[in-house]
Every structure is written in C-alpha cells, then in structure tokens.
Length: 481
Figure 1: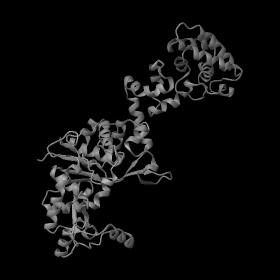
Figure 2: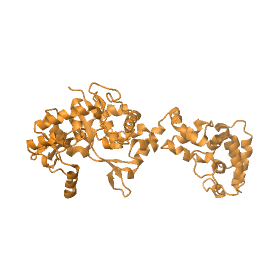
Figure 3: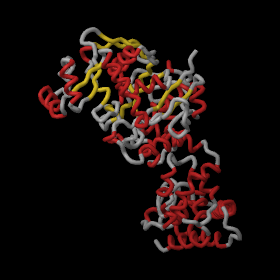
Figure 4: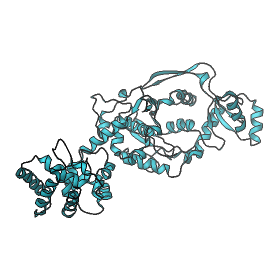
C-alpha cells in the first residue's frame, strides 16, 4: 500500500487566512493519522499577486501552530525543488505533449479580445476561438513569435464524474467546463496545471481543499487522464461561514472579525487555540469532545468525520476555547504569557505575581484583557462618594468613613505587607467592630481601586498596591466625605 502523501501548497500573497490554515491542518492530519508524509510546496506562479515577506509568514504560521512538514523549500526532499517558480522549465514539455496529442492547443487571442468577450457576454467565458485553427496558421503565428498561451481542450460533450471522500460522487457536464489556460504567455504555468504536474511528480496521494473547488475538479481529472496518471483521492472541505449581525450567515470575511491567523493572534487568541478550534470547523470527533492538543487531534482524526455542511466561525466559541486553555495553564506558563501585559501596568516593578495569578487566571479569556482590568493600578480613577454606598454590603455615606479610618489605623500597624497578614488583620477588625466583612471591605476596596468592578477583592488589591500607595489611597478616600 502506498504511503499517504499530502501537500499544503499556499501562494505567498498575504496573510494566512483561517480557511487556508484549516486546509493545511487537515492535510497534516490526513497524512499523520495514517503514518504518512506532509509536504510544503510554495505556489508562486501568479507573479502579479506575490507579496514581499508573505512566504516567511507561511513558515512562521506553520511553526506557531506546530504543523511540521516533512519536505519543503527549507528542508529539501527527493521531489524538489518545492517552489514552483524554480520548477518553471519542467511544465512546458508537458503542455507541449498535450498539444501534440490533441488534448491542448495554442491560443493567440489578445488580452483586448478576451476582455471584449467578457464585456459582451458578461460571463467572461472563452469562446474557443483558437481551438480549431488550421495547422498552417498555428505554425505561421508561432514562427512570427506571436504571444500565446496553451489551453486545455476539454470535451464538448458528455460529462466527467469523480468520487470525493466527503461529498461522494460528483458529475459535471463537460460543456460547463472552460478550456482553461495551462501555460501563460510569460511561460509560467497556471495554478491548476502546475498543481496536477507537481502533485503527480511528488507522488501526492490525497488532495485536500475547499468545496468551492468541487466544480473545477473535472479539469484536473481530464489532465490526469490525458497523461495516463493515477488520480489522487479528493477530500473537499465545507465552506467556513461567519455570523452576520442579523443572525444570518455568509462566507467568512473581514466584516465578521479577524480572519487571518496573524490577526487572531494579535487579537489575543493563543496559536494552539486557533488550531484546536479550526480543527472542529467541519470535522466532528466520534466522542464529541472539544479540547485537543495537536497530537490528540492526530490520534482522533478520520476523514469520515468531515461534514458536508458549512461550518460557522463563532468568535464567542473561540473566546470560550481561549479561556479554557488559559484556565488549564500551569502557574509558570500563565506568568510567562501574562508578563508582557503586567509590564504595561507595573513597568519593571516586582509584584506578588502569585496574587495576580489567583485573581486573573479564572477570569480572563485573553491575556490582552489584563491591562484594562488592572488599569486602576496605574492611576487611581476619579470616583464619586456614591461608590461607597452598597445595599448588599450595608455600607452608607455615614458608616463608610468609619470603616476606612479603622482600616487605615489597623493596616498601619502591620509588620509585614503581604496577603495573609492583610487578610487576617481586616477580618479580625470586622469581627471586633461587630460588622459583616463586606461592610468593612467594600469601602476599603472602593478607596483602593476607585472603581466598582475589580478583578479580586480588597485584600488582593491592597497587597498589589504596596503599603505606601495603598494607605495613600485609603486616606484619599476619607477626603471624599
């Protein structure tokens, strides 16, 4: 039995869209779940759309999500080179072979003529003008150096049927298939033609791509058949949709939110979360679990779990995933991820990080929420005296200053400013004053933070502020009355 070989063949034309990343992930999982090889190939034949630096984005994205390829431009391999522009000279002989065998033809139509066809029909389909040019005319035009392309000669009648691992048997009428360009005037192959040649030469056994390419698959198969090559297994993936404001769905686009891997990471989503989440966009594990490491995905993945139905990219669900991953982190990992955001608030100042960890880990869904949650540490907000009034805690404008004064006097006597001693002293104070803990702690927290909602209670906030700043704020609170 042949070794399963899949390939991820992105074009370096910009950011890595989540749809492309899902394709890469599924190709990786198809190969690795069956002990196969995952190949990276850079398809840069569309020279006009190339974006400088985009190839590096591909490498960095795959590295961040852990999709390690077995062969590629950076690793080499026995079927290289793995960049299509470096393979340019091998495509023309295959195109010329098809011309000789009557499976393709030279097309000399100018760009202006093709544009006029588009304008007249509104469809843009090619009218096969050059398909049956006399041999003498073709020879004359070639001899004169007339710019030309090579087009595939698709049968005008009948139909082409193929089997897809997800969508089953698909039949397309040949009359609906355009005589696509195989080799462009600049000598570069088109994406579709290079794909077939390279997939064959690189022994690719499984082709994974979006379902939007279902109707173009017959073009590929007619080429495989023309060359007498084995057709690979096709796995077409369902569309990824986004939720609109009115509750309807449409194909995922920027109006729904970040749609590139880089954009999602910049928004605060962990790379491993993005990988986990997009794995479930169109694939359902047999046990309906949701949290997977990449290794666990590899062990659980099977093609028969891929759905035909479109998948909806749900940012609320992605937030939940991110929060769950954060909750499951070790204290050490949490601190590593949180530290850049802590430094936005505290600079290089040392703080009792374990206290922050205890109040934030279960609360945040993204690490970039930290500066906003802790902004009151940078500067005490201006707040009204009304904040001290809380029905549940039974605090009023009359008893709040008494609570603050007593807290200040008690805290000033503390020999060590740390969480346990602050906690014991204030709980003991409430007991001596014969008031509920909340009656004492509400005014203390308001004076310390200057805001109604805080991550953590009065003791944690006082601890993090430090003795001098905490007492300064409590005394400033007294001046509100």
